[in-house]
Length: 181
Image 1 (tube, rainbow, N blue to C red):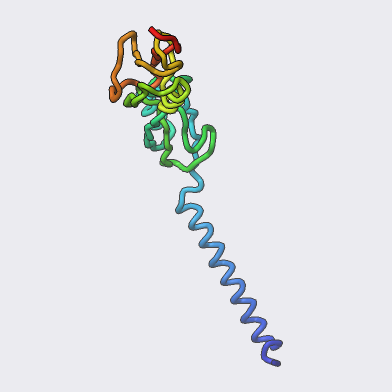
Image 2: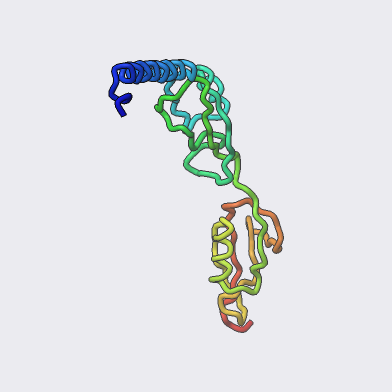
């Protein structure tokens, strides 16, 4: 027990603490410079910028980028423009950092028109809206089935179930009015 209170032990403990502290400090300083913490750049605001213009903006900023296509068309932005970026604009990052860009696709996707003939108006509207199709006009014809779908039209022409049409297309529904012919 006396050894822990001796001058030799206290001196060795003090030296070990100093050497350990110097090693830790040197490691921190080395890692700070080795990981390029001193070279930072500000991320430019790329939201709304066309894909064609991105190269020059990214290269000027000493950054890299990767484009992630969006599967959803956003009407608020032009085609083939950036709608989201990670990291966000004006954030400081290290040089050569990869920026992830989500772009607006060049068009809506396509959907397959489901079987809606002989469905009720309510079921047909729900089904079409779930497929991201828009409902156009309701045209009533004499038929005993009130609000039963008799036909579907796209651009004024009858379209059979299974047809491939663009999303956001307006579909007109021919419905029965509940009266006998």
